[in-house]
Length: 362
Image (cartoon, rainbow, N blue to C red; front, top):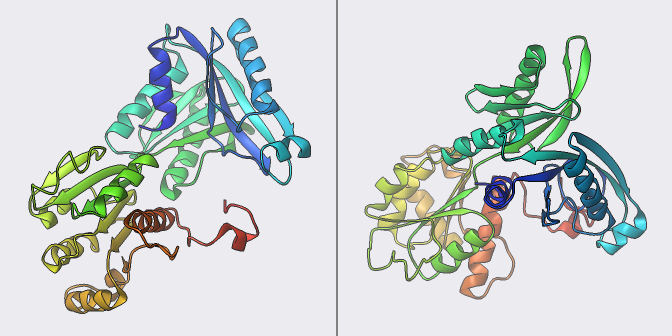
């Protein structure tokens, strides 16, 4: 479950109503992306942030208190001046649009109902989009299979918004505001994409697998550790792993949903385990397939698989796995592998940010 839904569930347990502030638009340099949320409770409790502190968040808190008192929703636009930007470690200012709404857990309004639907979809491993009108309220949930729930209050707008959401689900792009044409006019709609977390399947419960699983968990990935040896795949060695699977590695990996949100990393360093798993993983839709080892070992593995797999399938192997960070210790090797796997899954090259002109790629 992603952070938004986790916060919502935590707040529901101890609040009757809260103000939900959602970052729906950014221009220029801003510290957070569209979809970032801040929650403000009636007692003044604050959870999350739409920037990283400072005057913008303070203004959002003040607007949230007004929304809690008076109801309704409001779209707040703020400019992040150069002075404020410097305080946040940025080199220049930007502008943000924040939608502030009151969420009442007692009447299960559109927002709560939409996130409940999204929670069920994510629990089943499926992405979902929640569409919200910036003015006029309403929520529409669009599932991966094209099905919908709830409404923006207009059938024509629902149909047009569903088409936009479907494109967003296919592309995997981030949350954003899109002007949607319906009934001879345009309506600004915020499309909030929720996707299951990346899952890292670690084959081989080795000494390297332990920090790799721990680091993957720390950055929010779901982790599955697979090994044919019960004495290695234990809770003592992998206390934070989401799943430990013991048995024939290739069969266990084949039983998993290996799709675009799956990263497969082989660290067993044993041909008997690796070759059968690679035959499965390289034919799957997994976003990343990496193998621990040297270039010489990689050439040998590719040669052994060359008669069974197509050249484009073999080309998917990242071997040696990892980015060149000069790793020397086992945790550093794990860090380099994790970084490369995430970069590949996100369509990045893993280049230095300074080489990109000192800014993060968007």
